[in-house]
Length: 209
Image (cartoon, rainbow, N blue to C red):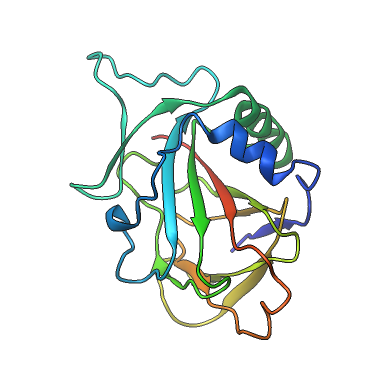
């Protein structure tokens, strides 16, 4: 498994800048009750958006909106990415050599910081090319805040060897998340005692089939 971690690649991009850039595409209220991982992630609030990068259309040949489906009932309509997100996508393409079509935005806020556990899963939604590695970029309001991200080495298996990566502000991670189970491990109170805010934004860049 090839898991590529660049620490602080986007550290110059501030959390307030990202929040402002996404203000027009994220919902005003958290979508916790709508959360597709509600059985494995708690507590806290999450907002979602699916954005088309560059010239990627937001409507299909039939004129209907392109949708990103977590399941049959969990649907996001594809929106045009703001210019700041397009600029990050261009930099991600240069870093990874992969031209992505869309970016899924996740805005997290935990209470208290570090308690969230995201259960093991595959990012293999029907719209996505599961064989293309996914790249994530993390932005945190508090630079001391990091998430413990775990990826299993063997494809389609939830046991055996795994890699744990601590993701902080500005970090870039590229990994085969469509074929390798992954999740987020909760931190201890000791780990988070100096963290004042848990607010973070995760951009995951993906390719459509």
